[in-house]
Length: 618
Image 1 (cartoon, rainbow, N blue to C red):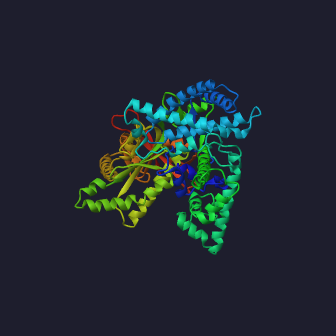
Image 2 (cartoon, rainbow, N blue to C red):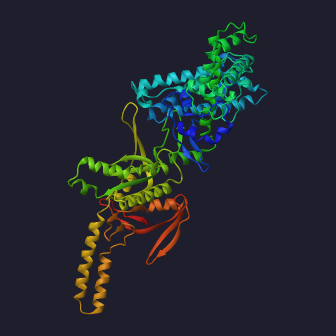
Image 3 (cartoon, rainbow, N blue to C red):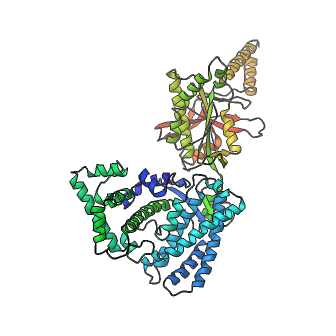
């Protein structure tokens, strides 16, 4: 959730109530913040979560809305509304059960209700803009809508428990709380206002609103009194008032525009002012607009704060809803494409919500010489310090290039691109990471801070994303499958130093044998035959493949599948380096030309087909 709100920074100019500060968001939605999937990054830099609701949702919700609106205006049959509500409630309950049972503490259940809020708000907006209906009447839906969604939530939890006792807590996690759900159920605004709609106090309180028992005139009067007292406080303290209020309310440094209008949208400031009974409480109770209402001062304060907090939560939810794209019934082709790529969440009454098989680029980083070093007379503490000195500078690069550390393997690391938040540039980012890592290791070696070298492999392909629940709050996510194994095997290469030694010994033997042949033609034929039978590939930045398909990797190796994926993202040009051809392109992120050399076909034991691989010129 925090990531999606942070990525909405471009929308902050349009915000009226919320400022997206960490503490403020935490106070509105609780800690830890509710989980939501990351979504995919689009060409415009926005993250989008694609959702497909069960096909009958739109029809069932419109039937419920039609009957409920008629009941509200006292022109409809109450029994018809109950029948429509029952059908919708049953369908939502079934889909909600699937969201919990298939969720692995990844925010599916929160996304389900956020998607309902987005879709229902769009239907409500369309409904009340037609047929001469009064748009502000949508706020009268709250009692029925809140009751229906609350009952759905309760029924979902009960039905999940019938599957297995404790199943809801297991799948949702010990740290799960329903703050986001409560905002959808009880704040009124998320389900009836779209993310593009500017919600004002005048609109919300312009009708006798059962959710907020405060008149528009009463709200304005309280606001006027609070504003007057705040100005007095600022003037009396000669400009120090803001700093003191920030210190008292715990929002120091978070108010970029410390004017009364901004401060009076902050619940902590409002609570602080309400405590001043002499200068705020008495004027409120003495006001002719509020006097004689039979409402206590505490109730007035609570209702006012409730409205401000609801407006702030709704504005944050509006930003979240902008990240959710609901696919229509007419987008079946796009729906299948996104689902196949693991980018679509299907909230149906049955079936899989998310396809956990998706295209991922996997990077393995494997140290060379670690095993030999560990067998020397060196303590475990010294060896660990050497690993820290090597990996600590590397880890920040993973975040820089939007990768995820899947695991450390003692003397290596596995990094994935496209498991959580997916970008089309994932293969390019993986390559940039590998180059940056090798440059860093070379610098460390030159400075005498490490003696290790590293082999890095990059492979793109379909993998299965698994979520293993490792504790009350912990989920270990990893990728499994054939393509992960290929990436790992491309990094676990032979000993290049031993290979070079054997190659030299072989060359010396061939030279000795050829010198014993009398005729020049015989020597030439002999050498040509040996080279054909025992081909030893050319080494490119520490990477070579011999004639038997053995890979020796102390550089960066890419599978041909990865190269073809990169070809779809950038134009690869062809070059010629003596007898070897290569591909190259300019990387604007690293601001350098990257050259890829085909070094041979790698053969793995137990695998029939060979894998063409490329090496990066470092």
